[in-house]
Image (tube, rainbow, N blue to C red; front, side, top):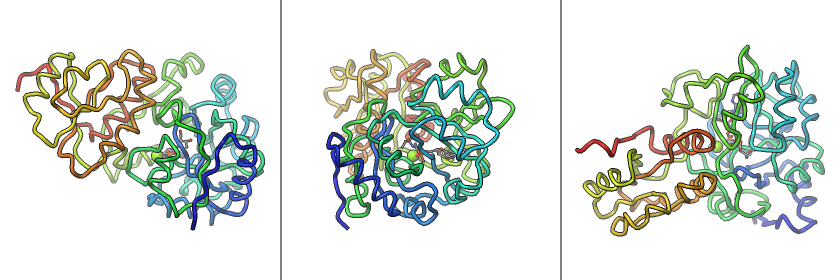
Length: 344
Ligand code: TXA
Ligand code: MG
C-alpha cells in the first residue's frame, strides 16, 4: 500500500486521518511525546493490525488516547478523585493513567488486563482526529518493537513506509520521551514509567507516589510486572551501549582509555570538544534537560547501525525530566553503567 503523508497544518488532514481510523486502518499520529501508531481502540481487528505492524508481543497493552478528560468515563469505571485532579493539572499533556476498564474496551487493546491506560495528548491535530473519528485511538509508540521511539514523521516512514495507511506530520515531538504512566488502580498511586510529567509534579497533586521496581532495575523476562512493556528490551540500537558516569573530565579519560575505532560517543553538546577523535554525537545540552529528552531517540536511531561496535553514553544526573532520560538511556544500555571515576 502507499502510505499517505498528511501535513498537520493542512485543514483536510484531520478529516482524512479520521476517515481511515473509522474504516479500521492505521494512522501514525503526532503527539508532544513521540509519534503513535493509531487505530480505532474499540475495534479488535484494527487493533490487531497495530500489533502486527510493530511486531509487538500480544501481552503488551496499548494506551487509549482521548480528546478530553470527561471521555474517560466511557472507558473506565471506579475512577478515583485523584484521576480527575491529575487530568485537571496535566491534560492535555504527557501523562497516562491506568484505571479499571469498562467492558466496551476490547481485551485485545488491554492485552487481557482488566485495566486500561488512558491519555489526552497535547497535540491539537491529534485531538481533532479523535473527535472527528468519534472513537478513542489506541496507539503505542510508532517504532518497530524494541527499536528507539519515533519522534519525527521521517522516523515513522523509516519503520513503516508502505505498511500503514498514513502518517500525520506534525513536526518533531517537543518532549521526545514517552508519557509518564501512573497506576491508580491500587491503594497507593504508583509510577510505572517516568516521562515529561515529573515525580515531583505528581507528588504535588497526589501527596505521595510509589515507584515501581521496573523503573529502576532490569526486569526478568518471565516476571509479572505492572506495565508489561517495561520487561521488554527497549530503545536499543543494534550494538551495546554503556553509560559512563562521573565528572566530565574523568568520564572523558575513561572513554579515551577504552575507545577503539568503530566505537561512538553519545554526549552532551558541552562535551563535544572533549571527544573530537571519538566520533561524538551530541543529543542536547546538559544545561537544558528538555533538549536532551527531545533529542535522545533521534540520536539512538542514528546509532542504530550494525557497523558500530560499541557506544559510550553520557547521561544527565538529577530528578525532574532528567529522571525520564536516565530511565530510557539505562534501558537502551540494558542497565550497563560504569563509573568513570574509577581508574580501570
Ligand atoms: O507518550 C506515550 O505514551 C506514547 C504516545 C504515542 O502516546 N505511547 C506509548 O505507548 O509510549 P507504548 O505502547 O509504547 O507504551 C505503553 C506502555 C507499555 O509499557 C504498556 O505495557 C503500558 O504502557 N500499559 C498500557 N496499558 C497498561 C495497563 N492497563 N496497565 C499497565 N501498563 C499498561
Ligand atoms: Mg513504546
